[in-house]
Amino acid sequence: MLSNLFANLDAKKSIIAQARPMPIETVQSLAKDFHLRYTYHSNAIEGNTLTLNETKVVLEGITIGGKTVVEHLEAINHQEAIHFIESLANENQVLCEKDIKLIHGLILKGIDAKNAGQYRTVNVKISGASHTPPSFFSLDNLMTELVENYHKAHAMHPIEKIARLHVGFAYIHPFVDGNGRTARLLMNLELMKSGYLPIIIEATQRATYYDALDAIAAKQSYESFIKLIAELEMKTLDERIEFLKNTKKDKRSKNVRQ
Image 1 (cartoon, rainbow, N blue to C red):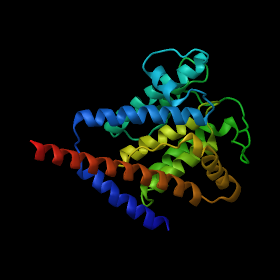
Image 2: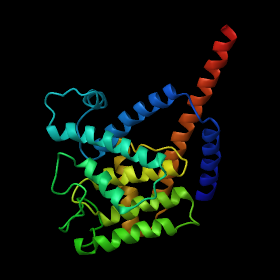
Image 3: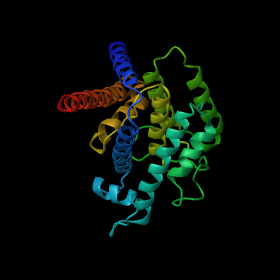
Image 4: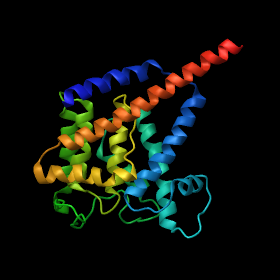
């Protein structure tokens, strides 16, 4: 039952909240690790061939031989986009279309100046998907409706609400390229604003992720996708709680030695 899963998530979210604030050095090290892994996996899902270690090197400002300029820019841009959504989350900014376009503009910065931050002006087909995105003529109305409906869904659990935002965005497919990365950044932005931890959909989960999205278009069933996002959030919370336990244990051991 999703309700039981949500209750468990909320209990673990409270444990994380009680551990705050953490030492700045700890926060920075956790963020650096997350930025690297998230950038690698989100780009890999979309076909970027940089390995995790290569992504790390690129983010440190070093060029990798044999890799394209676009692949380098995708890594650099994605990290910049993460910094941007973190600033929005810290300011608790209300989700708006302007910020969605700004996030997308960062994703395609230096890659596609014409389309960066701009809704598409052509019709598109998603390769391998059973769903065909709506006509570009309807994008303005659909995106306005998506954001308005998100803000109106007060009775819905945050995890379900955020998962449905991702689904709605993917359904509309408002940009020519970069929709997947933008959707995942939007999802993590709203997770952070709701007090949860941002999640990583790993490259190895690509098929499961796309199948869960496609099932909605084919069967009008959101449950598998909502469950996927909830389980990823559970995994992330469990890992953070375990990290906090080990940190607390190490601190006690240090005090005893002293």
